[in-house]
Length: 283
Ligand SMILES: Cc1ncc(C[n+]2csc(CCOP(=O)(O)OP(=O)(O)O)c2C)c(N)n1
Ligand code: SF4
Ligand SMILES: [Mg+2]
Figure 1 (tube, rainbow, N blue to C red):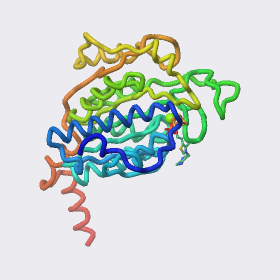
Figure 2: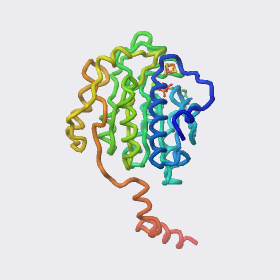
Figure 3: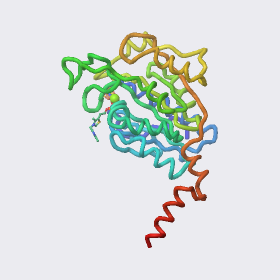
Figure 4: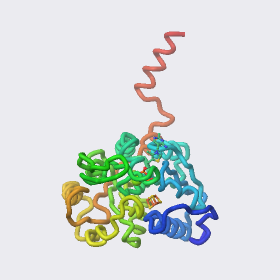
């Protein structure tokens, strides 16, 4: 399928200037490029949460599952487990994935399920009109914090490194070409690929100028070096001014959850044998 055919006829309700358009464009081009390499578009499944980002499921003409807020990753994991042949891409919001669904994010990284996750990190609850999220900076004034938040944000890249993610990257909607390259790298990575996408929310947290002056493309960095990745992740704390590196900061090889399960499928583990013995004694 060519890139033009990947946009549906659904009425688009994203605000003018919303960074979601950039993510949509990058995803569409990536899927079309995969198609040219022989990846059947029918093998690709998109899973979304609930929020402005989630409308991607309505706007991209591919197999999709519009899930529920905070539960994007359990649904994506189930799809991959049921059919490991599928290419599973998940689009989640920062509220969706760093607040309500944070535990699922940590476990997806721990399990190394072969899913590519794009977090549309606009650092605000967009759909519900401007409440703060775990990555809003200290003092953010929004619908639920008119006097400014009193909480420090957390750094999702550090959380992912600590949780065992095998691919950790950051993109920004102010740098579409680099974002597109990073998404392709994430999809090609065999394992859980985490991409935090700094996304401009034109209506409730417009950081266009700030990102424009702060972001840079990471070069001369050893992605296989965990300590170097931690240092790179800590360069910017999502709060104070510092250069914001974009691109892949960490990559490692580890068997995926699906691979580990298929290795034991058909064989009886000690634990399964114990359970069977206990059940047989009962009957
Ligand atoms: C279980 C559940 N909790 C809360 C909500 C209400 N809700 C819908 S969207 C949303 C926030 C969306 O923010 P985010 O995930 O950052 O996505 P964005 O709109 O910014 O893309 C919330 C709290 C819901 N629909 N379901
Ligand atoms: S509220 Fe923000 S994230 Fe939602 S569509 Fe508008 S600009 Fe985009
Ligand atoms: Mg958000």
